[in-house]
Image (cartoon, rainbow, N blue to C red; front, side):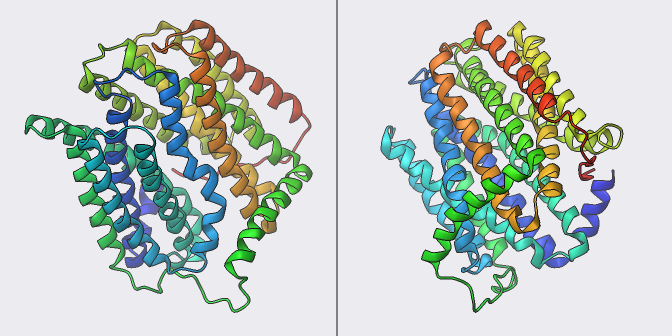
Length: 435
């Protein structure tokens, strides 16, 4: 595949290779860490969480990305990014060990979520730092390819970390150790390894470059808030980009409700309440299958958008998501749910690739950073809102034909609405080739 060839070419550069290893090792460890969180919060045998508990957990996971995202860049433009990458991982070693002690003492309530929030907030600095550092290790003419490949590799690393986290739990339990504590201990070690890998690069290699006219931190933070408003105004003048953001916001909402339902099905419907390991393994498999759908989207979207317009491809993906929710989703069996997870993953990533491309093509470069910051907020807030709605409308089992029908109808109405507002001829935009 072309992507494998491009990646091999990029990895010949020693500094790109070292930065790439920091990304892969960090996001691999994120997968191990998330298994421990899911097990303790959602799959703990001492509790049978309802939709509200799952919504609170999802909100905690996404809050750093929703709130901190637009402001992180202010600090990344002032601190050594090599140091940010190293210290972020080292700080997470300490926080994860504290969290392991909390798990061992059966910590619950606000104290638990504060610790989790701290761990995930640090991750926001790490991911943004990796993106900001990339232009310092890649030639300008290879930057687009690197930007397409490295997030995909990071996502694959995260997915690969999930079964490792599950294995760590199993091995810990067999050795008479709390499985979740064992998984967190493994994660702490791996975060330490990622931090050491970051230190193999020179301190000043990744920037930021010196800028004598750079505003003070207080002024810069104020500029972020004003910039987000200006980006919103600019979107009003770039309707195709605005419509794309609206479409992905709606999609993320319905995808979020479906995600909450899926977690509840594995926790309270497919398995007995005390069969935690089987339930967690089943959900991990569903995530892996959904990840396969993400990969297929990266392969077929560039080809599809060379044959039909980006608009038509988005409409087809939204329509396919609507159909998938009804069949096979409504069968409510594990095999049918895996099929649905695959096609929803395909639709989700395919729509995201198209919207990314629309924003890159239609938004003026002077506003692009601010618009993508808004995109980040919309992408995550829509999911959190979906979790909150799921807490209200979903039963504890996760099985609800009316909710399933509402999700399918929501996808269908999103497709119809997007088709109507974009029906005027626009310039054709091809999605970037990632495979």
